[in-house]
Length: 515
Image (tube, rainbow, N blue to C red; front, side):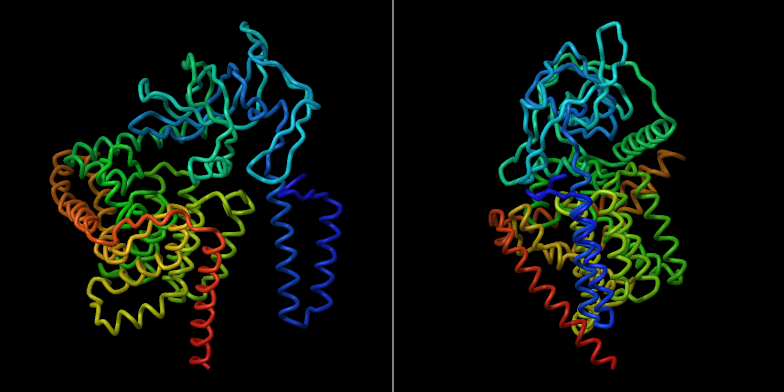
């Protein structure tokens, strides 16, 4: 297997790991020596795992047919991503009609996969045949991201049939679209499908259950749209359900300029902050810390169910759970090992999330920021005499701590710096748990008695109006939405090295005071 230009032969990997294990055992008494050897061993294992998940692109994989026009059938295997200008469908369980493609021998094609430096030799592989009255259908591995019209509407689990000129996802300006889709196992895109129609096919039991969850989510959205006025209803859909397709472009631009886009994205940072703020809210309502923990965990699980139990949201939910666990024990700084263990498990399942999943990076850094900047911000806010009433200080502390470490990576990816973002976030983010819980209550009320949901919608409109107004006012101020362009990765690394050094100093100074 090949990764970044290096061939990972299993035998040589075994020898390297054996050498590192022996090295760690020889120098076991030396703590630094032992850590360095084990760290190197885990690094080699990580590189090997990264190479293993890279797909073998042969005639049995759909990416083999990029730059060819083929006739396919497949199943929609993820929630359709509805947008103003169309719907994105992730299609898996793909079958290829043999008469629509010219097969090539292995000596005719070399393919570069996933943006890495290595080239993969495409090998011819005999394919199983599915009998059909239309010809011979061959099952293929992999997924396709297909662009469809908004109407007719497609659902998760639907089987579709289409003809398309497949393409490999390329960079869009500074955004590596191919790397982003590779995290989801997608290496082919179809922008202009022809003869897209529904086809017959079966659903597994798990797919039927998930389809019902998504149907419920659609019903919840209808309740929120009925209970609220536009555009407040669409903003609440974004906050509670992660559906941002109907939010006006002007509001989205204001959020981008003042650094508030994360509140309407079901991202790791958003869920992490919401989980922690829920904990503080339940404590403020009079629950003991242990009781507030279980209430917040229940709220987090309910939140994940309502937004559709997406894989990225579940990963972010794991990070949010770690924050809740650390809050419960009251030892935020001691939860770093749990965070590291969770990150290792997530990356073992999908190692490409390390470099390609911005949501994973944001959630990891947000939790890390909460852990290490909790104490310094506690002292800072105490000096400013921020009130502790209704856990105002704790909520503000968590909001600021979560954003300290994510700011450089946000600038790196999106090339936008807002000098007013800290103040805008302070005025808005502490309201998120109230608005989120109120959104849940409106949905529940709408399921029982719609007039009650309409009454609660008037209350929610006050909070949502405040959020829209603050974003609008701050977007007009100097220093909002400064376009910096995408910073070089070297600068991002240097910034995080400086931050790491600062964390090391804070941790050491705290340890000396305790001694």
